[in-house]
Image (cartoon, rainbow, N blue to C red; front, top):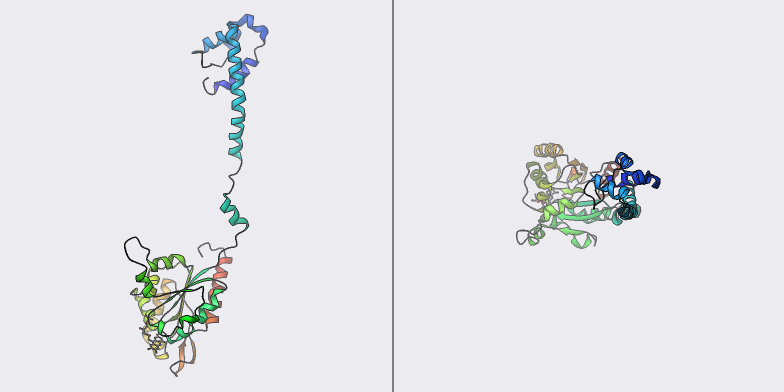
Length: 291
Ligand SMILES: Cc1cc2nc3c(=O)[nH]c(=O)nc-3n(C[C@H](O)[C@H](O)[C@H](O)COP(=O)(O)O)c2cc1C
């Protein structure tokens, strides 16, 4: 049978009452629109059906079989086209059951004496967020590693190099940069501030910063002696990092670890936590899909 003409054939056959068959050729010539596989022309088909009654039965049977087979198939196909695609099992589970995942916070410490509060800062974030930590070599003089929450991995420069052995291995600073939704450096030393402002990247922390996607939130909480804070370099560097899109959690004025009184002490961990969380949640409520 040849394609679309088959359906017309059913109508054509139905429209010819048996009584017309004796007066075949004119009637057939006028109405028939069907060629079966055994007939190589319309003329032959007409002859088979109306003029040579024996062949007529075969064609009738063919038509019936084709209709029986094709109609359910076509119905299925049409239903598939008009029915919306079902969501896959995973997506369905996501939309119905899954809670949104926790924000991923990369907390970093550089070599200010305020790094003695770093473990406390990690604790502040762990209930709300998934936390990973990065420490510069200088900051390790101040951090009590045993106080870091158990579920927080602390990465150092040593890990950056021990995790890479050959081409094809993952590069830690790139992996951490990919993983994080938010970065927070607290405390930020004068040295690391200057390196970020100048684009230097000679350790794990500054390599992450150098690779950072600045459409993601990034906070710094500087901590340094008042002499350092008031030095003209500080303002220059703060302007540079502000241009990058890094947010400043300013230091506070109080008695410093060195005994001096003045500005330069790191903001309290609870203040850093609430600033970051408030910012993140207000952005999320605005429907910012990037964070
Ligand atoms: C006891 C001690 C306390 C320090 N405190 C600070 C500080 O509060 N802020 C700061 O910017 N640098 C401070 N420094 C200097 C930094 O540790 C130093 O510049 C270091 O190179 C910083 O390295 P990093 O930025 O890679 O962590 C201190 C150094 C010492 C020895």
